[in-house]
Image (cartoon, rainbow, N blue to C red; front, side, top):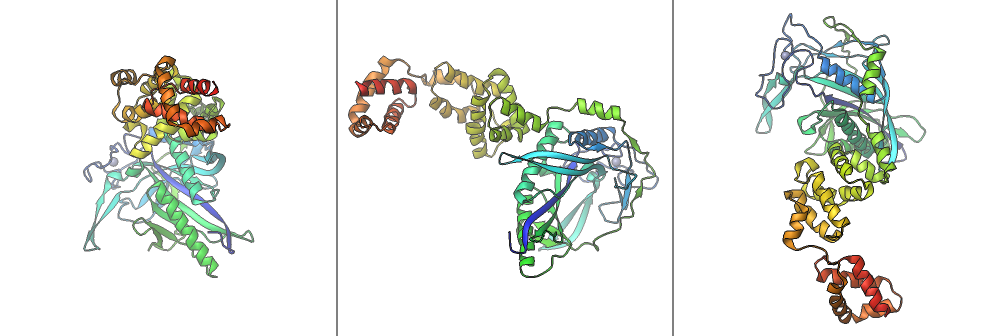
Length: 485
Ligand SMILES: [Zn+2]
């Protein structure tokens, strides 16, 4: 996407996160996914005349926790505002949100989030964190490819949202994806949202422009409707290529909002009202300002869990590579598994090799996460101990792992039942070593001519004959002794 006209991609994100509350932002209605339409509603979230909103304290606490964890400055007093516009999914004709005036800051401003891209540390500045409410949901009914009518479900109307806006610090679609993975992990560690993306709990809008060779920034477009991390990366890659083509052809990029079409894998201009809308923000008169004192901020800071950057650093200090540490930290459930196993088996590097290697490989192949399978930390630790005490070889452990991961079971019982114990008695292996040497004169000759690699082959043959049960170190020693003699 780098052309003569454009040298750099500049991306900023606006992320809407559904907060993990039991009830809505300004009323007591329950929050639930896929409930029968229009069953979780009341006069407040329907915007009926005379209904008065009350701030959900837990939503405020979760927003504050996030803003503090992102290193934001917390506004001593922040307000809600009315963002006025008409749309069928917004029965009040305004959304209660937080606008950024000089004297009315949102909940938090000027933070940052550290993350890594292929092991390299990066940081993105956070412009602001604020609270707002979600809108209802329109369901367009189609017949023969054309929308015949639309239905509205107000269950989502008034669900607590937190909006996180970044500075335009991201430089590629892949980087944007990595940032979102890191943000999602942070939100999970903070327990402010379950972040189930398939339920729309994390929605992303992006601004993208290209910087020209002379340093000037091109016109930006906004891309909406990206519902997965993959969609974000693909939509932004498409949009960057599209802008580069426009500029390369001597054209002008039009400032507009574009939607991502998942089916066709393209962005297209959305038919919205004129851009640069005037939402006529004004302070919400039905809600008092929210005061957050310094003592409160300090208390929140003290209750934060170990944050991803700290966790990464600790894992590296235990001997993990930066890459492995990040691979575990970016998946909070895998990190919890690793921590529990580590408490029982304090060889961090050995454990990390298994978790990021064989275990992750099985999970990837099955398209599952660690919580979806039968493998428990104690089972993996049990398996590793069997290797350590010489009962089984690493080879046998690797063979048993898929079954233990997907079906569970007791490693020691499985090894005993199948007769997989390691053969560690030299007397039991000597005869086999003789047979292998006799059957492979060529590698034997090669080894005697100084080719070390030939020994690896011979060890492999013995391991194969014993179906992985022979102690490889012992086989190695026996072969050497015999070939030297
Ligand atoms: Zn309600």
